[in-house]
Length: 69
Image (cartoon, rainbow, N blue to C red; front, side, top):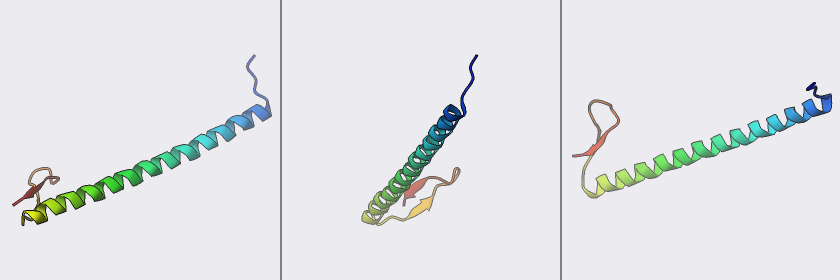
């Protein structure tokens, strides 16, 4: 018969809470890394466009493209 004691159950709860805190921390780090990558990419694209004297415009269709004129 598989029966948990109160102490074992409480230990499981504590471990789950620790895992949840760790997962939240990891997700926060991922979000911060993605934000940094986007900022770096914007800086690179901006530098390229400025060096060529071009302008950024949103590509037609998906609305996600950036092209130099």
